[in-house]
Length: 76
Image (cartoon, rainbow, N blue to C red):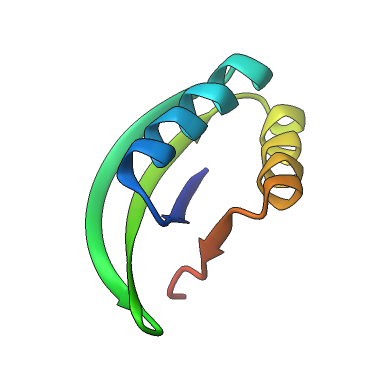
């Protein structure tokens, strides 16, 4: 599963992804990273690939939601 995740700080992003990997035991691969503006502040957008079985990927979605981590919609 490939997702674009939005973080306010780059250091927070890396720490959060490390926590995700430790909590759920999945593999995370950074594909791209960019800084963009949302509203009036800059955010760090990381495109990552999550590799695990389907139940773990479902758990990752819940994990993001519980922590208030925003995912950008992917273009169809």
